[in-house]
Each structure stands twice: as C-alpha cells, then as structure tokens.
Image (cartoon, rainbow, N blue to C red; front, side):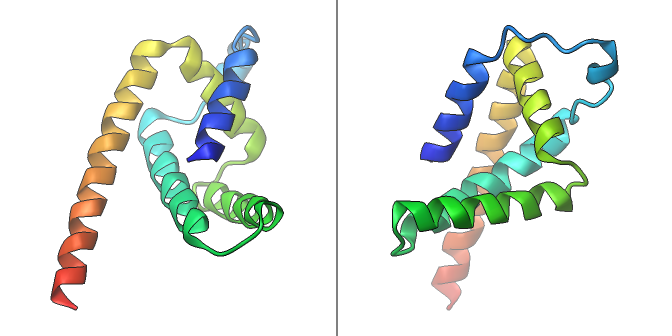
Length: 118
C-alpha cells in the first residue's frame, strides 16, 4: 500500500507536466489501468506479508511490477505518463478507482470463499 501512496505522491508533484498530443496516444486505457492497479495492489499486499527487509521488499516489488507491466504490454515510462494523465483528469481517475475497488472486493470475496472450501 505504501508503494501506491508513494506513486500517487510522486505523480501529484509531476502533474504539471501535461502530455502533448503524441503522448496522449500512448496513454493506457482506463480498463487496462484498473487491471494493472489490481495486480499491483495484490502484489503490495503479498509483499507486506513477507518477512523481508524494506530493501528486499523494494527489490521484489520492482521486479514484479516490471513483470506486471510486461504482461499488459506496457512499460514504466508509459505507465507513469498514464498515471500523470489520469491525475490531471480526475473524472477518469475516479472512474478507475471505482472499478478498482469493485475488482478488489470481488477478488477478496472469491479468496474468502476459496479458503472456506479448503
């Protein structure tokens, strides 16, 4: 969770950097951002549960984050640019977070049902 908060704070400070028309074509669509955020949130939760030093957590997070971005055929530069774009378009960001919360609730409910069956 602290990594998402850190990312939000970093992006907030850079929100004055408005992407040009060329950059807007490289913005990750909202649906894909939701999926990426879901996986990153789950990753952060799993890392927080591990008995690792802060440095080890950071290393694991960075490695896994790159794998998540590759899975969605994007990279850190486009991800960060997209995040800045959505910070500047609060209506779209609100929509992303609404879907993110819905997705995480579905994931949590599915996980709790799975643990009951085991």
